[in-house]
Image (cartoon, rainbow, N blue to C red; front, side, top):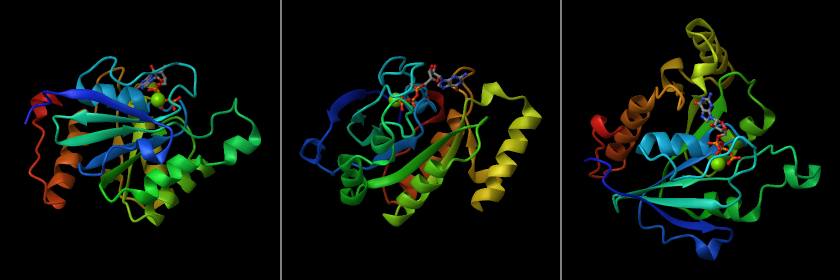
Length: 206
Ligand code: GTP
Ligand code: MG
């Protein structure tokens, strides 16, 4: 299928606002400014569907996007946003916790990590958190355009060792250079199949 429709559904700040969990959801997690909203736009071929900003902390709500009335993308606020107080920084807002604990329909949780940065404690906690709720984290290294080919390979190898995840299962994207989206869709298509869903997104549409 082609991505014929990609609509903003709702910005939620409390559990009651979450749409019914009747459609499979793919959630994008990661530190503030890592490129979650940009990646959503790039994957869908829509420039401004998810709001992006060079200032960290742009996304403050859980934003749901309806794709082809078939599945959803879910854009989360980033963690580790430096401007908020220490207390707030370490606090995982309740509505986000509720999101992970209450949704049986999450089929994929992408954890985005800036390819230039070291794996942070927040990233490790995020990965554990996703696993705790029974989901399988999928790692994406963002901003691939910021490193040359050999440094990209090195960064991926280091992370692979740290996390005990095979290198081939760590994807690299660049929304700036428009690289890596087919691998992401290949991954999602496999997950749709594993979950018994009759969904296949054609490469031509990304
Ligand atoms: P929060 O909503 O604050 O959590 O941030 P986010 O993770 O949604 O990041 P966002 O998509 O808003 O992007 C943050 C900044 O990184 C923006 O200035 C983007 O243009 C930039 N950016 C995103 N992806 C890439 C990329 O692949 N390469 C480069 N060079 N910059 C990128
Ligand atoms: Mg965002």
